[in-house]
Image 1: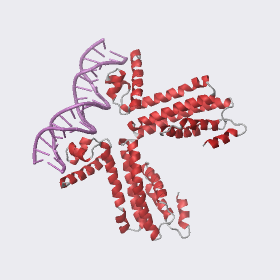
Image 2 (image 1 turned 90 degrees about the horizontal axis):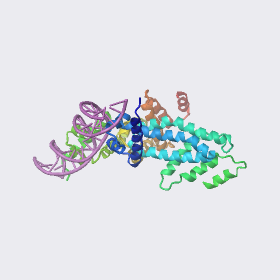
Image 3 (image 1 turned 30 degrees about the vertical axis):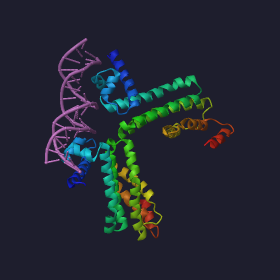
Image 4 (image 1 turned 60 degrees about the horizontal axis):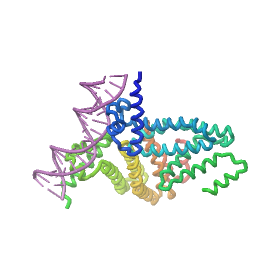
Length: 190
Length: 190
DNA sequence: ACCTGAACACCGTTCAAGT
DNA sequence: ACCTGAACACCGTTCAAGT
């Protein structure tokens, strides 16, 4: 039987840790415990090592992202949902790389591999909705899109954030264009 | 004026640290000082931070590598010198990646960028010697060769070390083959 | 069943005292 | 001019004592 205060603690720890790591990747475990208002023992009961905590934070971020898809699709047209979702994804990737210096390359690699499948799944959902209502090309590939997303994150990290116009460009390319007019405009836009 | 014991200490620290890091990338600064037979203060006088020590170790490794070129070229024919040198390079790269988990991604990147130029320079020296005596193709590009070297290091890390046969293959490709016969054999060898 | 927080061994780093 | 090593503040982690 999981006590309710235990569950609440777990959530508080994760929230505090997420905030703390976003501010400073070098934050100590004891400091996180204090920020969360629990003893260090409680922190270690829930996350037995520093690495497991970092992994949980990122896993949680990905879970939110995956889980937000149905809501986004209910609220707006598929292309708009995809735009919003991708913006969130880029922000999550940037956070992951913010952690980067506190995360060992090996851990970083394993985290990327573990989240690849679910992320592709979410993109597939968004694509399928657009393909069904005719706003996204039927030959669009989720894996290709994710690849392009990597370029977006790099663009977002640069001094001048060009990720939004670049995303608009990609989404244009995904759209269905009866006369190819928008495709021409896209080439001009580069 | 640099005292001779100071210079000796610096060398002893670097040697001890190189050995220690090769065994365990998580070695502590105090442990390194003890292994080198100096007080922690002396260690910090020479290398004011952990990162500066790691960087110095790798820099030293690259310096040795660059410096070994004339000796190698004096002792053996260019292609043989290139083979030996590349074997040493792969071993150095493997060490760098052994450090990898103790080195921040940012530091790892900057170290790679800083050593790129000198490494290309060393390869150019070896190539030029081979081009002069007609054993290496005149159109061979040092940068391409270094790129292929990356594949060698990955092959060396795999459970079955295939780096030596792969290196032989690349060197075959660099050689001058009057009738193209060796090139055919090379394709068969894959 | 879970939490607290003092305690442990050790970390990176500093600096007064020596030679 | 340089070295030593005790000392400092803090680290990740544990565990006896509580509720």
